[in-house]
Length: 372
Image (tube, rainbow, N blue to C red; front, side):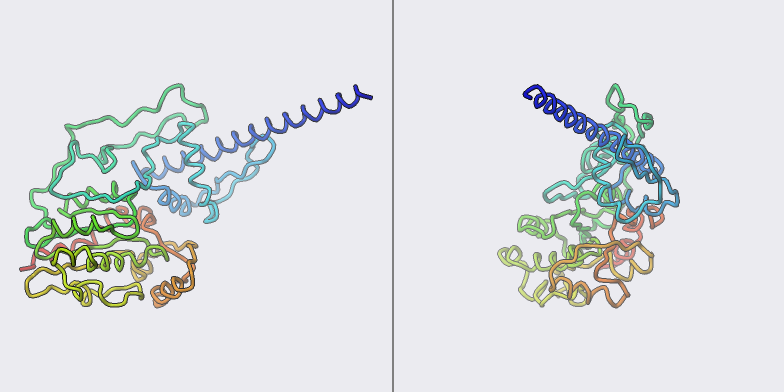
């Protein structure tokens, strides 16, 4: 009787171990299959460096029905279909796996970097490097081992060609002594994509986490010109649509008052909550020429409609947030349950996000040059 019990226990142990090994194997094979798909789409996208969300929008736009749905036995591909919005929640996982397997260079995908980051046009970074130290003007070489083999060596790195530093234009209008332009974001992952445009136009690039800190505002007051314009760039979402309001409130808050440089009513004093600040109500130039303007560069509901940017489900937020967001987007027929992201410009705007920012900045630069 005891022998039968031990035999049964051994059978159960063996079956359990086999099940565990099979699950691990299936997970690995599914990961490889999905990771190879991600790497192929990234290579097809052709961007030297991009964000995960930009890759998501590119995948959505593709007509190919090649997204693999894998089986649960050995991870085989059961069927393929077009990429869907609901697949986006898993994209970061497959990108991470693709990095681990060596199918994707880890530097090809731009990640959020915590903290606040300020890039002044007066400070040129050696070698024409982007904010994270990678030469942004050099081509990205996709690894050639997309077939599934784990490479025996680390994928080739992008060469450091310091001698190929791009030349800056001799005259950068945004860096005028009388008028200073600044581009403020609430997403640091976009800095490498926008820094070349900001350098070209002489514009300060600043990224913060949701709301500027006191130190960021004090640094702004220390470097501002007689006329300073802050241009805010953010997603059209319940989390970001009030970004320029938060910046305006911070500029007109205690940090400025402590230095005696801003009056209470100059910036951000009125009750904010509609999601849109009119230029006439923000930072109107005072007689002494010491005003700071805060404007929204994008994304606005009208821009989203005009450019036909894709809308995807976003965070719903609490009732107060929903009401404010609904009031802001409803005139353009946008559902308050949906959002539009800056990353979509990489796919849906000719020349990508950098070209969009350049085009939107041009009239502001002309206004800056004509300021007296």
